[in-house]
Image (tube, rainbow, N blue to C red):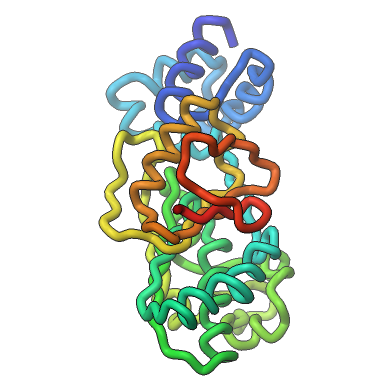
Length: 272
């Protein structure tokens, strides 16, 4: 990939997706885009660049470019301490002490949906264990339409479901009738609690109307520079009410000095 082509992709990716692409990531970018070159039977990155940014290519190929550039890594019950905090601390406060009966939850970088469905299982388990009645709605958003289609179907391999507790597997998942497929699917009553929509965090505003009491935005900010982190955080905070909680990745250090938040657990922040 020549320097001009790299710069063209770099400017688009950083400007549109907010993902930092320093020169040290040039080889990584080449490796990921090589998949599209092979699929389109193109010989070099310059031809691919010309195609992507043409009128026809932008319409047909831009989503494919976004899919190979973005990292869609997720799992059921990933970073389990966060879900324990919801069950043991947050829900007793929201449902018990505050008497909240309509809880809105947002999985900001939902990817293929495991995080959003984990949240749904946690909510259902709390309702069963404590015999309390409340409603909840979960919104899962991502920039990639491809992963959102997977999320909406709610079908995963048995290996992808390996971290789901056996009791939860029995209650909330259906195994394929064909044993050779080795897949599971979330039951309809759980899928109905989750809605998936496309959203680009780099947009100047987000098309979500509700305030969300629980917002998961984990392992996203590691790809942004500090100015971008601040802009995205400010936009997210516009959709979190006072007392609402933001969950971030344990490896993320974003510096919350400009935000009216309080750290209440590891990588968990409450809006003041």
